[in-house]
Length: 455
Image (cartoon, rainbow, N blue to C red):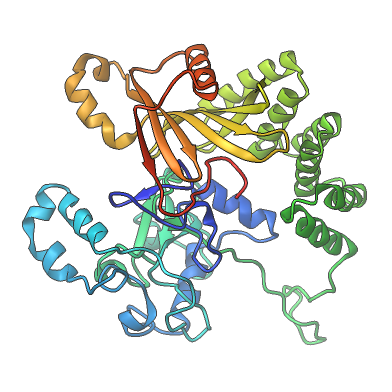
């Protein structure tokens, strides 16, 4: 389950993002954009990215390929002859590239720590290769035939988002500065990002009136940095006063209200959390992070009527296309013995794992112990559809009940079609009380992050 997506037959790429030397990978476009906004930046436009990647060069690449990028020929344990295996071996094209994927996986190809290859003339590393990078623009194949000649901002609408740079499993012809990609913004596999921001020129009496001057950081900026630093450390009691001071000085700061709400959630001050999220939604009703925070607060506060009404509204927002493809929200929490269970629902079955429900299990100290998911693995659906053609034609899918610990993955059973939530809830309770055993179990050689739990 995201972000622990399985790449090419089972290779996990930086699960849980625990290795800070590695690039962030397997991220949906909405999450990338939201993070950049959270830290005060944004995703670069496609034109900005290409300008930064070229660094003054007009060549297809800003240096010799092996010197500047990780790609399929050099990202594995041994040199990978992609020209022969991919381009010349027609069998690999007939079967959709599956044989190619098997060979890549067998060779141990994967992402690599950032900054090991030579940077471009702007000093930027890994602009090509390693991971595809999400950009701000909608994708339109013909956009640049009629776009503005300076600073094109991209199409105003579309269905795909632009990605650039190529990745660790790609062949050389995809690792070019000019190579454009378009992908479903809900797709995570192989996608990363880097944040950009505005550059301000130093103050000068000869500066153009259109050029903003550089100013010293405001008190609010200092408070936000202080609060965010404490928030990242999990010191919510220390972070909350900073965010409240920001909202008092700037009542239009959606980010500060959101962070204050999340601090209050973690401190179990649910009325304050509700107030903060409601303020943020008054400023921008389309900010989906705050809908998720508000229903989480209603759930933990035991406000069932408000939770159920908001749940219906969230479903409507999903139907209207106002929520990201992988949006999920907490809608129930309960106790089993000395364990606390927090349940999330995913509105859409999407991605490789296709989660519907996620049951995160914590001890009384709040430590994540286990996770049980109802999921529908995309790779298993074609085989299931052949065995159940009528059900598949009616839109049904195969589901499984999976369990995740830091050292193992277990499967507890399969379903022909989606089972009702109450049935799943009862079976999860049987698992957590030891009354239901796994049908299969795989152990991990190294500890893995538990889905939906802090690292």
